[in-house]
Picture 1 (tube, rainbow, N blue to C red):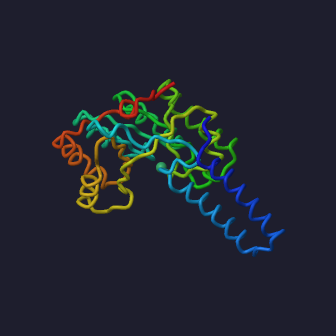
Picture 2: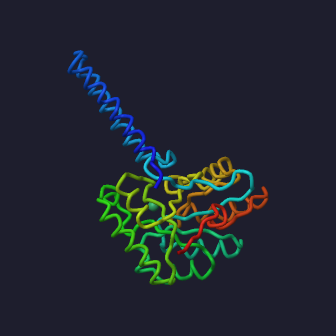
Picture 3: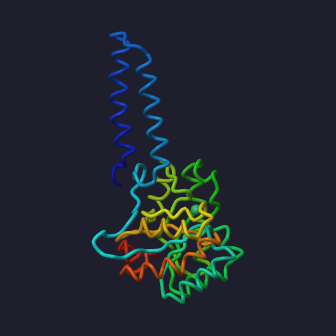
Amino acid sequence: MDKSKFHLITYNWLFVLFVFLFLHFWQGISVGYIIMLVAAYLLILAAGSMFFRWNFYLNAIHHGSRRIKQVALTFDDGPSDKTEAILNILQKEEAPATFFIKGENSTSLRKIVRRVYDEGHLLGNHSFSHNVRFTFQSKKKVIKDLESAAKAIERITGKKSRFFRPPYGVTNPEIAKAVSELGFTVVGWSVRSFDTKYKSPEKLLSRLKQKTKAGDIVLLHDYPDVTLKILPDYIQWLKQNDFQIVSLKKLINKKAYA
Ligand SMILES: [Zn+2]
């Protein structure tokens, strides 16, 4: 495994810390400098967790080639009672998509997961529990959770999903180690729709039109009403502007299943 930015920063930081400690004990510089150095390090670690696109703890793929006018649509946090309505729109528009599902939801909505798969869309792992606790677990527990989610998909489709998107896009060293051991391809996004926050379809659609460019991976969710409302218009707009909607595996040129 390549050394992550986290490792490189930590090694360099330890070196600087050592120098500061030396200066403190032998040259008498203020302990305040050491406190500041520790605080700056902790701040960088926290930011590295929050800002998924930094690829701080692990290398995720956030977009495809910027030279080809293609985009991939992704829907997180389903399946839900709205997923079928999303599937109907995608079917009508002949648009492929990827669903990063919550393992927990799929156990009660197996039929919907099966329909997603049967209609040629991809299924990705978005953890089993998708709660805040997931982010603060040990590597062992993260692996257990991700394996439960993988099994949930496999039981319904017979396929082992290779795509993983971390809940909330939050990463840390434990998640990075777990993902590397399990051999997942980690997939982020380059257009965040904020469809769980926007109430106005007009504003959401205008944001998407403004942000979408060649190679983008678009992050949507398959439960907000507002997403259902704008999806046909967004797809029409993409087509009118010569964007080809392709499956995620084609956009990033990676295998979706083992
Ligand atoms: Zn999510």
